[in-house]
Length: 133
Ligand SMILES: Cc1cc2nc3c(=O)[nH]c(=O)nc-3n(C[C@H](O)[C@H](O)[C@H](O)COP(=O)(O)O)c2cc1C
Image 1: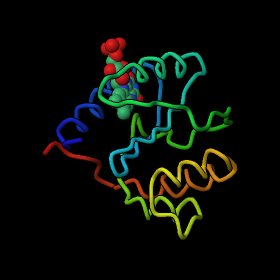
Image 2 (image 1 turned 90 degrees about the horizontal axis):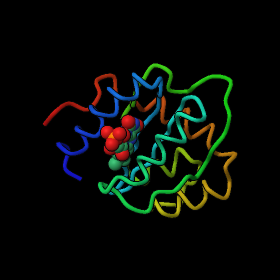
Image 3 (image 1 turned 30 degrees about the horizontal axis):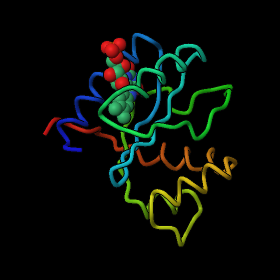
């Protein structure tokens, strides 16, 4: 996806997420989006429904869903990180996995890895977020 399209998704999302009190993170790796959505359960479910129908991507699925005491990305309406597949695999504790598909498969079957991946992603958020190109 060209940066201009990505930028539009982020800018629009940040505006509506602020209104809906949604926070989170958008990760773009090798043509695949991973997204963390944080907020009231009904708000997040409704948003997920909308996002699932968005023609700018396909094959949307939920890989991990949990209740939390505190949000991880509470300071961001939608932070953005774009690591390499290898970097993401390393953050998931998978040293010899290099494709996003295999990392996702492992994360899906071993959801206990999520808290640690999320804290690595939190540290990877650039100080200056994605700018218009
Ligand atoms: C990868 C991706 C992530 C998105 N994330 C959000 C988001 O966090 N918040 C949001 O409001 N819309 C997000 N959208 C846009 C929604 O799919 C939808 O276009 C938007 O909510 C506008 O809905 P509306 O029809 O009610 O105006 C995202 C779209 C894509 C493709």
